[in-house]
Length: 68
Image 1 (cartoon, rainbow, N blue to C red):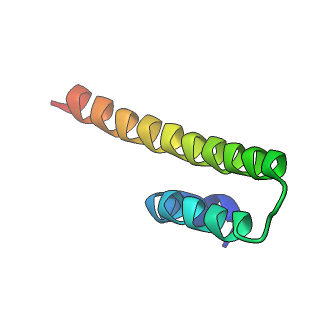
Image 2: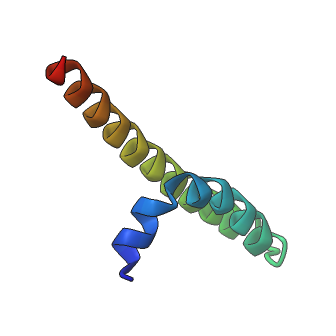
Image 3: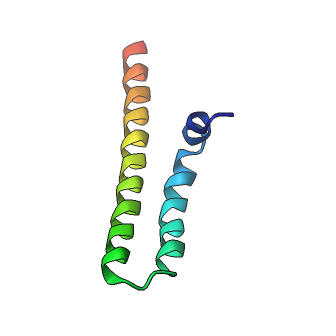
């Protein structure tokens, strides 16, 4: 199983785990600037996953409308 198929099959789970992993990483950091950059990175990753999920749902909805 490739990473792409794993991500596609468990996209919502990845979206829920990303902030939790971010919290785990931030818990061990001490520098404020580093914490802000790590938080931004995890936020961007989560946003990217949301865009992917939205585009897949949009494609499914469009194909449903076209088939009727």
